[in-house]
Image 1 (cartoon, rainbow, N blue to C red):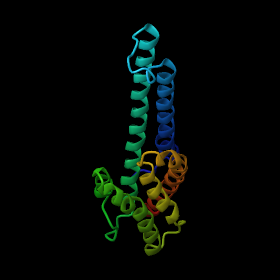
Image 2: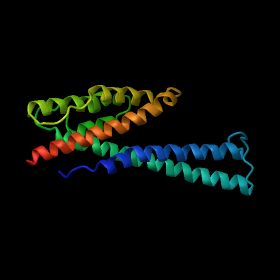
Image 3: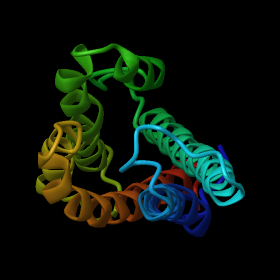
Image 4: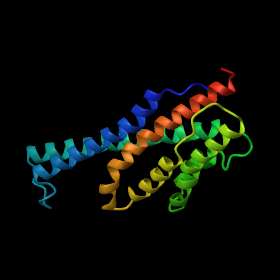
Length: 188
């Protein structure tokens, strides 16, 4: 397996989430300022049409950026579970990523996939005597709780910013941990 690029994963995961959120907020601001949200009957003047088309394109771009970031995040989850496979891991990379897409079950599975990853990584480095720093299990547990809170309407406004910060910290820890394991497995 090839060494992971920290800037690629941080930029793709955190950067795309932030850019996507900004694009969605700008689209909503344009819709509100143009009166499309306030008037249920849309006046299709040139300004109203411009606002509707621009907002629609911004919403598409924002959703595409967020989906791209989530795809890279799931790729990182796969690569991280792949690195700790020694016959004692609690799940496989395929299950870790795949079960996150099962509705409602994913509220449970996020704890297995992310918090379990930190625990299995720490167990792996102790069991294989890898000279590497342990992952902060509390940070991964916080990530799991905040990811569930981010899915709940109105609570997501409070949990959103801490979630993005912990997302960046977790991404950094995972990339560092996987790169350490890859270097150790390759003998260097």
